[in-house]
Image (cartoon, rainbow, N blue to C red; front, side):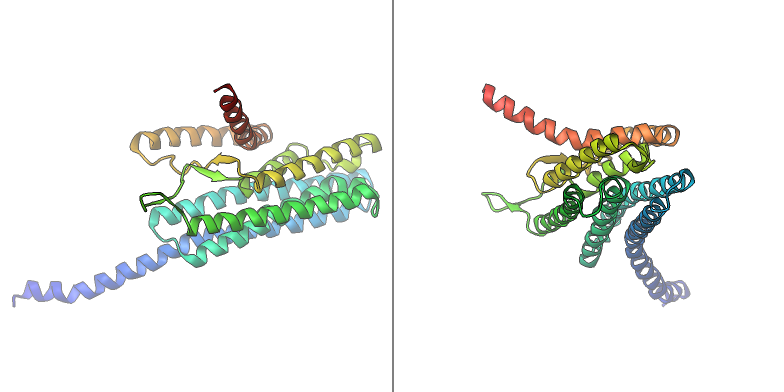
Length: 295
């Protein structure tokens, strides 16, 4: 055996070890984004509690500080939406999807997009407007809980559908990657967070009539979002975006443009994007019903 062949043979095990180590390292990347998601959810809950505590102190200065905490909590939920969209995409791109990662992601979503926005809306609106123990206060408490339980059910249904894809008549498995069944919980939470980011001042600073009016509107909204999550209305998944070379170029330009708009006009752009996504599934369903009736 030549000296060159012996040297190559000696180096091969080292190369294999390095490649295995690199592969193991890749599995950590999606989990890091999931951990960031959990961190943002925890930060949002803690910021909301601090803001709610300041509302009890009264005074303009305390209201202003409470608004800052509510705004920070809504921004944390917005960042969590970004982290949540990246962890799954990175796992698919690097082929590092694991069963524990899927379950960890669902648990993180219940905290960040279920509990955190429900508590935030409660503290920012009807929890501080209506008298504790009153009928409307109890109803608001119940609707916040309903939002959480509907979001948890939505995540459980998604996991079951992902593990048990629909089988076609010819025996092949079909997984619908273009759409979700029911409103995903991150956009539902994103809409609530965008509303509070748009107007972070707590509704307790308004007069009694306006506060009750806007709090009632938030109660209706959070109930509708819960109903949309457990519905069978289909929503675009955007998983196919960037799948081809041409769509990748378009996606990069679109994402860069949207990112700059968010940086410059975050309150308007985030609210518009969140509302548009929530509404597009409902409008598409009504459109399909209307077309069937005409046919």
